[in-house]
Length: 245
Image 1 (tube, rainbow, N blue to C red):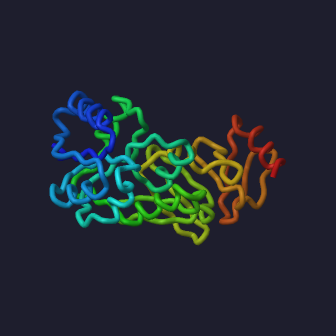
Image 2: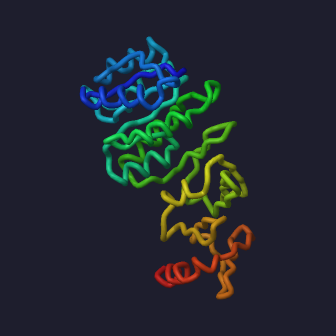
Image 3: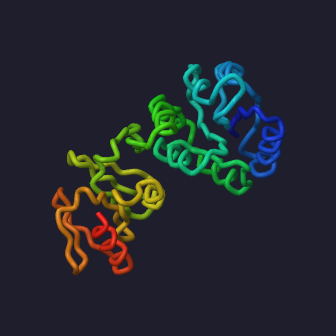
């Protein structure tokens, strides 16, 4: 069972989340503490050493980022709860951090709890927090790609193309490096957007800036020498995009 802390400055939202957890995950989550201010939250995390933290971004006397920069204990899984708009949701995805939108949906909460990694993999990386803080204030320039070995911070313009196989996605970078992630391509299609990126096929998402040539028959040649097919369903949209560029 996960020992959890809820950090939220609005009482009714704390109570609602607590009740939902008791209903949706009674055998998985035990709430061991609450906090409503940044200072209180940082002290609580270090003292109770939870497995799981639900945290709002805007708190009394500070933000969730202030909390994360203050704590020394980091062996927990973090789920942000936020009412932020779509641009901020992209920032969460670029930073590889979990989030739930307010008002929190019970089924989405259950899904978030179900996908929490096992204990040995739970560790909040400072680079994830730094990237999120950066991406919340500017158009994202970097993306975090988590693997079992490391958190890879990659400049978006380094990505040449992505290829999916089942629930895995491989990122091909302009220096020849490949990074395989245990997430499907659709997770990245929603944040790597046109005109720079385009999903030309069920298996491929490409960076259009690295296209060398493309044919009417439906083949794309990339700068790294890879040939990528354009699916029949994507041809019209792809050719239109290239004309606009």
